Amino acid sequence: MNTTPTLATMDEQVTASIHLVIPRTEMQEEMDPAIVELYSTLGAQGIGPTGPLFSYHHRMPTETFDFEIGVPIDGALQETGRVKVSKLPACRVVRTVYQGPYEGLGDAWQEFMTAVDEASYEFGSTFWERYVVGPADTQDPSQFQTELNRVLC
Image (cartoon, rainbow, N blue to C red):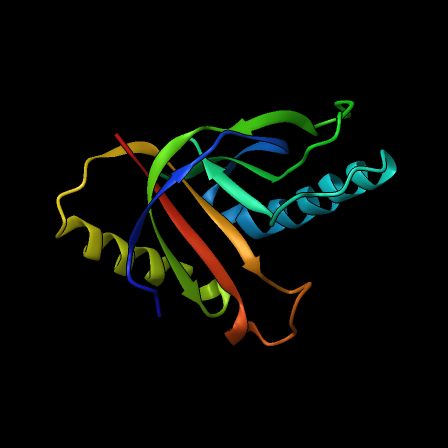
């Protein structure tokens, strides 16, 4: 179930991220190792995230996903391997929060888009998920909270 969509203004955020372009069918097997690599690189450099993990999608998915998995940071990152300095852009978004297991995200996005389509917003091509409460916070997937964001034109 999603919260009522709201409008928000986002400030630019410096991030550490790994850019992935992967087939839809390989999402789980590619994403988990990327998350481990990201946090390992940050830990090795003594940098902690300043906010939750996110996935920033550069376009709507087709048979492939084109996205960055990352976290906001405020330390100086030495780029290592696939871990690069990036940014979440300053922008206006329409947002909702979905509570439940990750397997329900597809339905949550569909519910969200149906709700905002009725409001006649004009969207850009980018969107992101921010994993506010996840497996590191609770073992109960029904308590996971994922923020869904669509960038407005």
